[in-house]
Amino acid sequence: MNMRIGIAILGALVALVLQVVLAPNIAIAQTMPNFIIVYAVTISMILSGPPAYIIVFFLGLASDLLGYGPVGSLSFILLISAALINLAQKTFGNGTLFVSCIIVVGFTILIHFLHAAFMVAMTSTYSAIDAFRLIAIPESLYDCVLAVLAYVLIHRLLAPPAQGPTAHTVGNLR
Image (cartoon, rainbow, N blue to C red; front, side, top):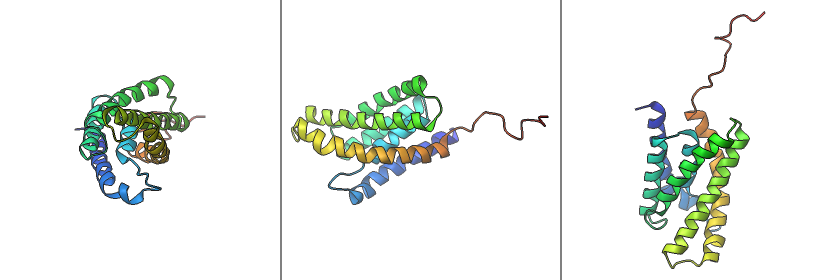
């Protein structure tokens, strides 16, 4: 197994533990962060292909089984968003931090809104207005900040090294 994939799987386990242990304790105005969504968006930006899809699917399934939504809804949303993140990164990504952060923020908000829509459609706990007002908007704002911070940190750990010329590979230029 590739070292990057092993670190990504370990990070997924850490995100799951943070969601269960830390998230309820750092809630602001009854709004909990969702470390699972934050990590899924971040890992979808850094890894591509089947490893990212498998990690985000199982993270979403674990979140649903822990009671954060209807079973299968977050898995489906994260799987579709991972594919769309890869497409957006290929289309709009130019290697700058600004564009990557815009993609991270946009998909974090989109995932929260889709998850709220699934909760309204599959459960009778919330009305549509309450789901977006009480869950989607506050959590997406909280998670956008965490997602940008997580992306910068995890990108440092998992991004492949730059392939440009370095001082060691470039000879004496005179």
